[in-house]
Length: 135
Length: 143
Ligand SMILES: Nc1ncnc2c1ncn2[C@@H]1O[C@H](COP(=O)(O)OP(=O)(O)OP(=O)(O)O)[C@@H](O)[C@H]1O
Ligand SMILES: [Mg+2]
Image (cartoon, rainbow over all chains, first blue to last red; front, side, top):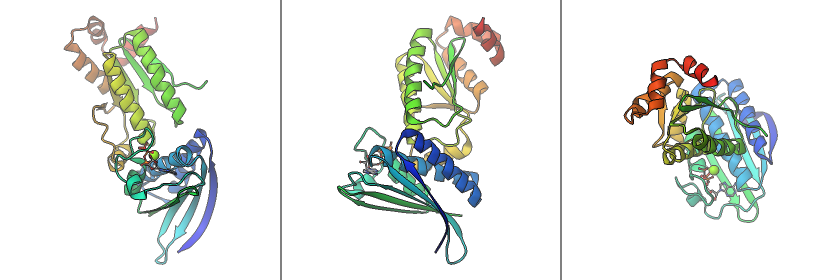
Protein backbone atom coordinates (compact mmCIF):
# COMPACT_ATOMS: atom_id res chain seq x y z
CA UNK A 1 0.00 0.00 0.00
CA UNK A 2 1.20 3.42 -0.96
CA UNK A 3 0.38 6.77 0.63
CA UNK A 4 0.35 9.40 -2.08
CA UNK A 5 -0.68 12.50 -0.12
CA UNK A 6 -1.36 13.46 3.49
CA UNK A 7 -2.64 16.48 5.33
CA UNK A 8 -3.31 17.12 9.04
CA UNK A 9 -5.91 19.30 10.70
CA UNK A 10 -6.46 20.21 14.37
CA UNK A 11 -9.65 19.27 16.22
CA UNK A 12 -9.60 21.67 19.16
CA UNK A 13 -12.88 23.58 18.97
CA UNK A 14 -16.31 22.92 17.51
CA UNK A 15 -15.67 24.92 14.37
CA UNK A 16 -12.74 22.57 13.63
CA UNK A 17 -15.28 19.75 13.27
CA UNK A 18 -17.00 21.78 10.57
CA UNK A 19 -13.65 22.34 8.83
CA UNK A 20 -12.85 18.61 9.01
CA UNK A 21 -16.19 17.81 7.36
CA UNK A 22 -15.42 20.28 4.57
CA UNK A 23 -11.87 18.99 4.02
CA UNK A 24 -13.01 15.38 4.00
CA UNK A 25 -15.75 16.30 1.56
CA UNK A 26 -13.16 17.83 -0.82
CA UNK A 27 -10.98 14.73 -0.57
CA UNK A 28 -13.87 12.37 -1.28
CA UNK A 29 -14.76 14.41 -4.37
CA UNK A 30 -11.13 14.37 -5.50
CA UNK A 31 -11.09 10.61 -5.04
CA UNK A 32 -14.18 10.40 -7.24
CA UNK A 33 -16.46 8.72 -4.73
CA UNK A 34 -20.17 8.49 -5.52
CA UNK A 35 -22.47 10.94 -3.76
CA UNK A 36 -23.65 8.23 -1.40
CA UNK A 37 -20.11 7.22 -0.49
CA UNK A 38 -19.12 10.86 -0.06
CA UNK A 39 -22.01 11.26 2.35
CA UNK A 40 -21.05 8.13 4.27
CA UNK A 41 -17.42 9.19 4.67
CA UNK A 42 -18.27 12.77 5.70
CA UNK A 43 -20.79 11.47 8.22
CA UNK A 44 -18.27 9.04 9.72
CA UNK A 45 -15.66 11.82 9.84
CA UNK A 46 -18.12 14.07 11.64
CA UNK A 47 -18.82 11.40 14.25
CA UNK A 48 -15.16 10.60 14.84
CA UNK A 49 -14.06 14.24 14.92
CA UNK A 50 -16.72 15.00 17.51
CA UNK A 51 -15.57 12.06 19.64
CA UNK A 52 -11.98 13.31 19.42
CA UNK A 53 -13.15 16.69 20.66
CA UNK A 54 -15.71 15.61 23.27
CA UNK A 55 -14.10 12.55 24.79
CA UNK A 56 -10.48 12.86 23.70
CA UNK A 57 -10.19 16.46 24.81
CA UNK A 58 -9.18 17.48 21.30
CA UNK A 59 -6.61 16.12 18.91
CA UNK A 60 -5.85 15.89 15.22
CA UNK A 61 -6.96 14.18 12.07
CA UNK A 62 -4.72 13.02 9.25
CA UNK A 63 -6.21 12.63 5.79
CA UNK A 64 -4.32 10.37 3.40
CA UNK A 65 -4.75 9.28 -0.21
CA UNK A 66 -3.98 5.60 -0.62
CA UNK A 67 -3.21 3.30 -3.52
CA UNK A 68 -3.24 -0.39 -2.76
CA UNK A 69 -1.23 -3.16 -4.43
CA UNK A 70 -3.78 -3.72 -7.17
CA UNK A 71 -3.96 0.00 -7.95
CA UNK A 72 -7.16 0.72 -6.08
CA UNK A 73 -7.48 4.24 -4.64
CA UNK A 74 -8.77 5.05 -1.20
CA UNK A 75 -9.07 7.66 1.52
CA UNK A 76 -7.75 7.03 5.02
CA UNK A 77 -8.63 9.12 8.05
CA UNK A 78 -6.73 8.84 11.32
CA UNK A 79 -8.24 10.58 14.36
CA UNK A 80 -5.81 10.90 17.23
CA UNK A 81 -6.01 12.31 20.72
CA UNK A 82 -4.05 12.18 23.97
CA UNK A 83 -7.18 11.94 26.09
CA UNK A 84 -8.34 9.42 28.70
CA UNK A 85 -8.53 6.47 26.30
CA UNK A 86 -11.28 3.88 26.01
CA UNK A 87 -11.24 1.25 28.79
CA UNK A 88 -13.47 -1.24 26.98
CA UNK A 89 -13.37 -0.93 23.19
CA UNK A 90 -15.98 -3.63 22.59
CA UNK A 91 -18.39 -1.85 24.88
CA UNK A 92 -17.69 1.49 23.16
CA UNK A 93 -18.42 -0.18 19.82
CA UNK A 94 -21.80 -1.44 20.98
CA UNK A 95 -24.78 0.25 19.31
CA UNK A 96 -26.35 2.57 21.84
CA UNK A 97 -23.50 2.63 24.37
CA UNK A 98 -22.61 6.14 25.48
CA UNK A 99 -20.70 7.39 28.49
CA UNK A 100 -21.92 10.91 27.75
CA UNK A 101 -25.32 12.09 26.64
CA UNK A 102 -25.09 10.80 23.08
CA UNK A 103 -26.98 8.16 21.19
CA UNK A 104 -23.98 5.84 21.25
CA UNK A 105 -24.09 5.40 17.49
CA UNK A 106 -20.97 7.30 16.46
CA UNK A 107 -18.33 4.58 16.66
CA UNK A 108 -20.47 1.61 15.66
CA UNK A 109 -22.14 3.62 12.91
CA UNK A 110 -18.83 4.85 11.51
CA UNK A 111 -17.62 1.29 11.37
CA UNK A 112 -20.62 0.40 9.17
CA UNK A 113 -20.13 3.45 6.96
CA UNK A 114 -16.46 2.75 6.15
CA UNK A 115 -14.68 -0.23 4.56
CA UNK A 116 -11.99 -0.56 7.20
CA UNK A 117 -12.11 0.45 10.82
CA UNK A 118 -9.56 0.14 13.60
CA UNK A 119 -9.31 1.52 17.14
CA UNK A 120 -6.17 1.62 19.23
CA UNK A 121 -6.60 3.04 22.69
CA UNK A 122 -4.73 3.05 25.93
CA UNK A 123 -6.22 4.29 29.19
CA UNK A 124 -4.49 7.47 30.25
CA UNK A 125 -2.62 7.76 26.94
CA UNK A 126 -5.15 8.40 24.23
CA UNK A 127 -7.06 7.01 21.30
CA UNK A 128 -6.39 6.52 17.61
CA UNK A 129 -9.22 5.61 15.24
CA UNK A 130 -8.26 4.69 11.68
CA UNK A 131 -10.85 4.34 8.94
CA UNK A 132 -10.52 3.71 5.20
CA UNK A 133 -12.92 3.99 2.30
CA UNK A 134 -11.84 2.35 -0.96
CA UNK A 135 -13.14 3.59 -4.26
CA UNK B 1 -24.07 35.77 17.94
CA UNK B 2 -24.69 33.54 14.96
CA UNK B 3 -28.25 32.26 14.72
CA UNK B 4 -30.41 30.34 12.30
CA UNK B 5 -33.41 32.46 11.33
CA UNK B 6 -36.92 31.25 12.15
CA UNK B 7 -39.72 32.51 9.87
CA UNK B 8 -43.34 32.64 10.90
CA UNK B 9 -45.82 31.48 8.26
CA UNK B 10 -49.34 31.81 9.63
CA UNK B 11 -49.52 29.27 12.41
CA UNK B 12 -46.34 27.52 11.31
CA UNK B 13 -42.68 28.22 11.83
CA UNK B 14 -40.17 27.59 9.05
CA UNK B 15 -36.50 26.98 9.63
CA UNK B 16 -34.23 26.62 6.63
CA UNK B 17 -30.87 25.24 7.60
CA UNK B 18 -28.42 26.62 5.09
CA UNK B 19 -25.11 26.34 6.85
CA UNK B 20 -23.01 23.46 8.02
CA UNK B 21 -23.90 23.92 11.67
CA UNK B 22 -21.44 23.54 14.47
CA UNK B 23 -22.93 21.87 17.51
CA UNK B 24 -23.50 25.00 19.54
CA UNK B 25 -25.48 26.57 16.72
CA UNK B 26 -27.70 23.48 16.58
CA UNK B 27 -28.33 23.66 20.32
CA UNK B 28 -29.12 27.36 20.04
CA UNK B 29 -31.64 26.65 17.28
CA UNK B 30 -33.41 24.16 19.51
CA UNK B 31 -33.61 26.74 22.31
CA UNK B 32 -34.76 29.51 19.97
CA UNK B 33 -37.46 27.29 18.51
CA UNK B 34 -38.81 26.41 21.93
CA UNK B 35 -39.16 30.09 22.78
CA UNK B 36 -40.65 30.92 19.41
CA UNK B 37 -43.24 28.14 19.53
CA UNK B 38 -44.46 29.43 22.86
CA UNK B 39 -44.36 33.12 21.91
CA UNK B 40 -46.14 32.65 18.60
CA UNK B 41 -48.46 29.80 19.64
CA UNK B 42 -47.30 28.00 16.52
CA UNK B 43 -49.03 24.72 15.69
CA UNK B 44 -46.44 23.38 13.32
CA UNK B 45 -42.71 23.54 12.64
CA UNK B 46 -41.10 22.90 9.26
CA UNK B 47 -37.39 22.25 9.23
CA UNK B 48 -35.95 22.38 5.75
CA UNK B 49 -32.71 20.41 5.60
CA UNK B 50 -32.42 20.19 1.81
CA UNK B 51 -29.15 22.13 1.94
CA UNK B 52 -27.55 19.73 4.41
CA UNK B 53 -24.91 17.36 2.97
CA UNK B 54 -25.03 15.14 5.98
CA UNK B 55 -27.04 14.46 9.11
CA UNK B 56 -24.91 12.89 11.79
CA UNK B 57 -25.92 11.61 15.21
CA UNK B 58 -25.72 15.06 16.72
CA UNK B 59 -27.99 16.71 14.16
CA UNK B 60 -30.25 13.64 14.30
CA UNK B 61 -30.52 14.04 18.04
CA UNK B 62 -31.28 17.73 17.62
CA UNK B 63 -34.07 17.01 15.12
CA UNK B 64 -35.56 14.38 17.41
CA UNK B 65 -35.26 16.80 20.31
CA UNK B 66 -37.10 19.53 18.42
CA UNK B 67 -39.82 17.06 17.41
CA UNK B 68 -40.48 15.86 20.95
CA UNK B 69 -40.16 19.33 22.46
CA UNK B 70 -42.67 20.73 19.96
CA UNK B 71 -45.07 17.87 20.69
CA UNK B 72 -45.08 18.84 24.34
CA UNK B 73 -45.88 22.40 23.27
CA UNK B 74 -48.73 21.13 21.10
CA UNK B 75 -46.99 21.77 17.79
CA UNK B 76 -46.01 19.21 15.17
CA UNK B 77 -42.62 19.09 13.52
CA UNK B 78 -41.98 17.99 9.96
CA UNK B 79 -38.47 17.64 8.59
CA UNK B 80 -38.48 18.39 4.88
CA UNK B 81 -36.10 17.96 1.96
CA UNK B 82 -33.74 15.32 3.27
CA UNK B 83 -31.46 14.28 0.41
CA UNK B 84 -31.68 10.59 -0.54
CA UNK B 85 -27.96 10.03 0.13
CA UNK B 86 -28.43 11.52 3.59
CA UNK B 87 -31.38 9.24 4.30
CA UNK B 88 -29.47 6.14 3.18
CA UNK B 89 -26.48 7.09 5.30
CA UNK B 90 -28.64 7.74 8.35
CA UNK B 91 -30.06 4.24 8.18
CA UNK B 92 -26.60 2.71 7.92
CA UNK B 93 -25.35 4.88 10.76
CA UNK B 94 -28.15 3.34 12.80
CA UNK B 95 -30.36 6.34 13.40
CA UNK B 96 -34.00 5.53 12.87
CA UNK B 97 -35.36 9.03 13.48
CA UNK B 98 -38.45 7.34 14.86
CA UNK B 99 -41.19 9.78 15.63
CA UNK B 100 -39.97 12.39 13.18
CA UNK B 101 -42.39 13.21 10.39
CA UNK B 102 -40.74 13.84 7.05
CA UNK B 103 -41.86 15.27 3.72
CA UNK B 104 -40.18 15.69 0.35
CA UNK B 105 -40.29 19.46 0.28
CA UNK B 106 -41.70 22.50 2.05
CA UNK B 107 -44.98 22.46 0.10
CA UNK B 108 -45.68 18.86 0.97
CA UNK B 109 -44.62 19.46 4.54
CA UNK B 110 -47.11 22.31 4.78
CA UNK B 111 -49.81 20.09 3.36
CA UNK B 112 -48.97 17.35 5.81
CA UNK B 113 -49.21 19.79 8.70
CA UNK B 114 -52.45 21.29 7.47
CA UNK B 115 -54.04 17.92 6.86
CA UNK B 116 -53.16 16.57 10.25
CA UNK B 117 -53.99 19.76 12.09
CA UNK B 118 -57.27 20.25 10.28
CA UNK B 119 -58.55 17.47 12.48
CA UNK B 120 -58.23 19.81 15.39
CA UNK B 121 -60.31 22.40 13.51
CA UNK B 122 -58.01 25.22 14.33
CA UNK B 123 -59.28 28.56 13.09
CA UNK B 124 -55.89 29.92 12.14
CA UNK B 125 -55.31 26.96 9.95
CA UNK B 126 -58.63 27.33 8.21
CA UNK B 127 -57.38 30.79 7.22
CA UNK B 128 -54.09 29.34 6.08
CA UNK B 129 -55.94 26.77 4.02
CA UNK B 130 -57.89 29.45 2.20
CA UNK B 131 -54.68 31.19 1.25
CA UNK B 132 -53.36 27.97 -0.10
CA UNK B 133 -50.01 28.98 -1.49
CA UNK B 134 -46.80 29.12 0.44
CA UNK B 135 -45.98 32.63 -0.82
CA UNK B 136 -49.30 34.14 0.08
CA UNK B 137 -49.15 32.83 3.60
CA UNK B 138 -45.67 34.18 3.88
CA UNK B 139 -46.72 37.57 2.50
CA UNK B 140 -49.76 37.84 4.74
CA UNK B 141 -47.62 37.02 7.71
CA UNK B 142 -45.28 39.91 7.03
CA UNK B 143 -48.03 42.51 7.05
N1 LIG C 1 -11.68 9.54 21.42
C1 LIG C 1 -12.26 8.97 22.48
N2 LIG C 1 -11.67 8.99 23.70
C2 LIG C 1 -12.26 8.43 24.77
N3 LIG C 1 -13.44 7.80 24.74
C3 LIG C 1 -14.08 7.73 23.56
C4 LIG C 1 -13.54 8.31 22.37
N4 LIG C 1 -14.41 8.08 21.36
C5 LIG C 1 -15.43 7.40 21.88
N5 LIG C 1 -15.26 7.19 23.21
C6 LIG C 1 -16.16 6.45 24.11
O1 LIG C 1 -16.98 5.57 23.34
C7 LIG C 1 -18.36 5.85 23.61
C8 LIG C 1 -19.18 5.58 22.36
O2 LIG C 1 -18.87 6.53 21.36
P1 LIG C 1 -19.95 6.83 20.24
O3 LIG C 1 -19.42 7.89 19.33
O4 LIG C 1 -20.36 5.55 19.64
O5 LIG C 1 -21.19 7.39 21.05
P2 LIG C 1 -21.39 8.82 21.74
O6 LIG C 1 -20.38 9.78 21.23
O7 LIG C 1 -21.48 8.62 23.20
O8 LIG C 1 -22.82 9.24 21.16
P3 LIG C 1 -23.12 9.75 19.65
O9 LIG C 1 -21.86 9.65 18.88
O10 LIG C 1 -24.18 8.83 19.14
O11 LIG C 1 -23.61 11.13 19.82
C9 LIG C 1 -18.39 7.28 24.08
O12 LIG C 1 -19.53 7.54 24.86
C10 LIG C 1 -17.10 7.35 24.88
O13 LIG C 1 -17.27 6.80 26.16
MG1 LIG D 1 -19.89 10.01 19.27
